[in-house]
Image 1 (cartoon, rainbow, N blue to C red):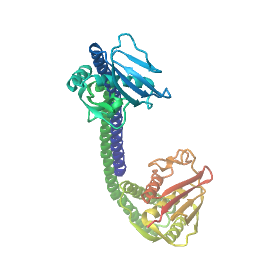
Image 2: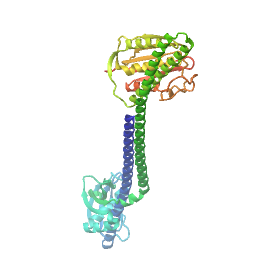
Image 3: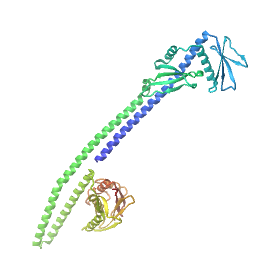
Image 4: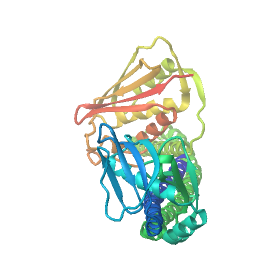
Length: 482
């Protein structure tokens, strides 16, 4: 019982830790996902802020200058290079050497730059050309940029840094995503791709909006965890109470056995003395034959019932000991000779005709196990065969080796049998079948439960084959591993 309670405690504690871990993992993933979504929104805001900044400085240049800038570029949509006159006002394309100018176009700066922009689409390419021209016609002011971006992004903006790489960046990307323990993120936004320039912007990801969005999830998870812990605490309390009640029951049974042994022994002693006196009296007065027979029958009945009560107390004591998991005394003993002795003992039954046959098929007479307990198991099975059979009892005991280094001992009889509905219940303590024809048959329902406990204590297993009206066969299999 104590071992089972410890196992239940261990399973309950492991289950609670597992569930709390799963809850924590789920919350962690939920927060991480929410932070990732917030990071994507921040990246979009950063990109929009950069576009707004370039548009703003482009508009400022438009008001002050009408200078054009000639640029030639290779686009993915055209086979040859396309020469473009870019200005802050608009873009004029030169086709076949003729400049298609827009109204208000001013001077053209005599400088030509050629770029290969076939790695991106034409729309992106034209935007990048305009960005490039705007950047050429203005002087980048880092302080002005920070003020502008900070005004757009608010307190989430931490700082920015211009980066020149080896490859052009065409799309915004998140370099360092935010984490649960690091609420900052690094976003890289295209700034001047033609000159391999990008802007790395560090931003703050606020946790308060994320936690507000997950408030009900966190409350639900907390309530589930609290309910689990309260349930485990209640379970442990109930198990401790059950353990206390079980100890009280065990103490009561031990006390009862101890207290009943003395009057039973006294009763048996008195019966023995009275029987001896009656023998002497019967020799002196042989004429009182009828009274003698009646007294002898009474004495025999008292003696048998005293023996039955002694056997019940012994069996109850053995069951209690088995529940307390007293260590087994594993030894090597002669199982063949022990089975022969049991067979001879049960053949001497005075009330029924008992025929016992033994089929021993092992190559060795030795067996590993607790000799007294295992022989008590076999004796219980044979006693049940005698008890729940007719006036003529046929018992067949078989012993053989299995293929898995085990010893199988089987006890078969021609008794009343056990129905399929009750074949699992008969192993329960104090259970007696209602199908017995004679419910006055002595017994307290501990024999098979004792068999079950002793077989399990040896690490073995049991099997039952029974049919009502035809008999029962019960086998125990005991491992023989050293």
